[in-house]
Length: 129
Image (cartoon, rainbow, N blue to C red):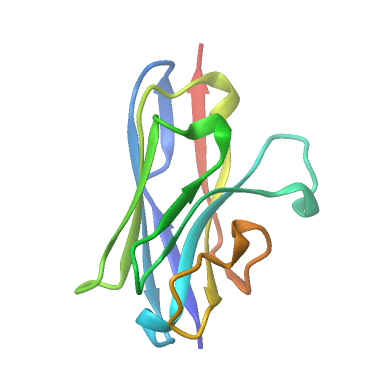
């Protein structure tokens, strides 16, 4: 049973930083790509968008244009954990952030960072101006 448990959200002022963590279990870690998605306030679940995704096998990562240069995704393969370091946060980054996973069969691609197979419960990130 796939489990993804996020932590690290909170309230921060614009320009500040947060680090999100996601502890994963229930699947062969290196066969998957992991990602962070976000759902902005007032948006439907189907409008949830990929922020950053990474192949566990190759560590190849992709980023949405809106976060390039500010966010960094990484994994700790010993702990089956994926992180999202968020710097220079802006009010428009306010959203519920979801950890997600997709089976890529251990390939080096990130699964498109669009629609993943599994999602966590989400963690709220609020950036005040």
